[in-house]
Structure formats: C-alpha cells, structure tokens
Image 1: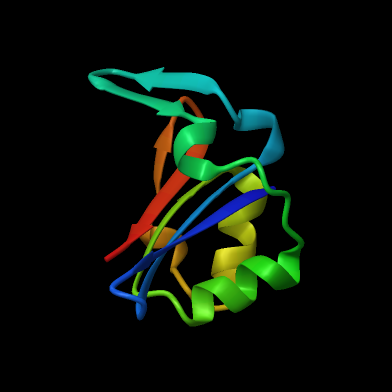
Image 2: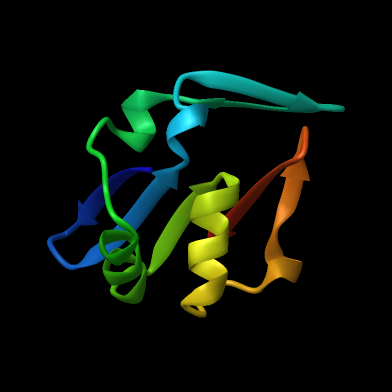
Length: 95
C-alpha cells in the first residue's frame, strides 16, 4: 500500500492511503469519478503496522482499496458501514 501523512500546523494529521494496484488509476461509478493520484497518496510504500500507527494518531484520513479498508476496519478506525463503493472499490473518509 501507499501511505502519505500530511501534517497541519505541526499537530493534526491527514492520512492518505491506497492499495498499490490503484495508484494513478481513475475509477468511476455514476456521477462519481476519483483519480487515485500519486500526488495525493504519495509513492512511499507502507506496512500494515505503518498504516495502523498513522490512523491511531490521525484526525482525518482518506482511504481507498480493499486491503487499506480491511486494515482500517480491523484496527477500529472505521466501520464497514462508513464505506462507499466506487466501481467495486471501497472508499472511506475520516473527518
């Protein structure tokens, strides 16, 4: 997976994570179109532990992909009901 952490004012964090096979792809369903850009999600690879650690200290997150979402659900960061599916790909935001 790819993981990028944005720091705002040195304290709050926004976590962006996506599955490796989705980077730089565009997915569409109905009126929804998302480009999963390396400019936003980064190009640094991460482990499951890296993602869990980042989510535990994040105020906001943008997550996309089956593996990333499964990890976020497993660690309690999100509930499955909080996900939407775009072209069969799960996506969730923590605000």
